[in-house]
Image 1 (cartoon, rainbow, N blue to C red):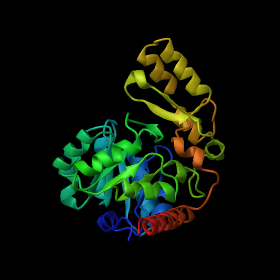
Image 2 (spheres, helix red, strand yellow):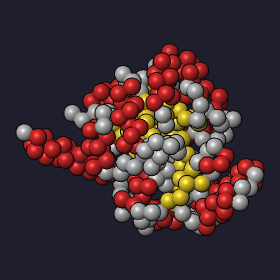
Image 3 (cartoon, one colour):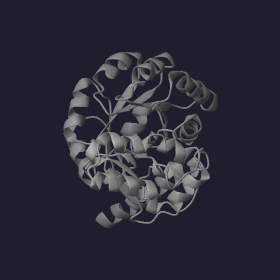
Amino acid sequence: MLGKELTDLLGIKYPVIQGAMAWIANAELAAAVSNAGGLGIIAAGNTPPELLEKELIKIRELTDKPYGMNIMLMSPTAPAAVELAAKYRVKVLTTGAGSPGKVIERLKPLGTIIMPVVASTAVAIRAVRQGAQAIVAEGMEAGGHIGELTTMVLTPLVAQAVDVPVVCAGGIVDGRGLAAAFAMGAAGVQVGTRFVCSTECTVHPNYKNALVKAKERCTAVTGAPTGHPVRCIENKLTKEFLKLEYDHAPNEQIEKLGTGRLRAAVVDGDVEMGSVMSGQSAALVNDVRPCADIITGMVSEAEEILRKLGAKAQ
């Protein structure tokens, strides 16, 4: 069975994890992915604790399958999110933007599985030494905040460096990507952009349409001078960001331009001056489908590819 090491660890049917996307990865989307046999993830982001708690209550009403939560450790609301994860005994926690050591100490004794999202081998090794049970290796093809290494380089490097299941992320939208992830030594995949274009995702229709219409050179990376590069669909906002960066504007001015832009895209549907976070893989997304169709299609396609490769090898 594909990804058995990961599916056994997480208690899921398919080795497909939904990426944590602020303002997007809510209880509705996470529950749909979990009900379809994957692992849905609620993104804590900077969500106020009282609102995050409502999402954790809601997902229990929508699914009886395993689900997870993501915490950005640099967020001021991260400590409260950790305590909510403890209160509701969240089965799986993915982390980013910081060292997961204290989170592992707090939640692992409660039975929570910790899977840090990393962009380098060194960070992966350190996280495993701290007690992480799995690693998400995210390449720079991904949407939102990104690192410097591509998925094809990062995944095999991490897979050969640690002795826990590795999840490949960044650029995965279909069975071809899932099959490639297994070839690189991963035990499963994390998928973000493809799940934005699902019927259960509650983002504004304009956001989904922007991804469906995207071409191969559809994204731009902004924010590099601030130390927090972000990949989004190219639009008027990204052009303004890049102009400020070209003019060596102060980081404060660059950060001010970005305030509230993700909400503008996700909630209000402003795809020109909103931050339409997306991976390069948007160019491979051509429709909006139910999460169950996305996952089963991805797995069956990967199985067929691997069967054909196996036959050729013989």
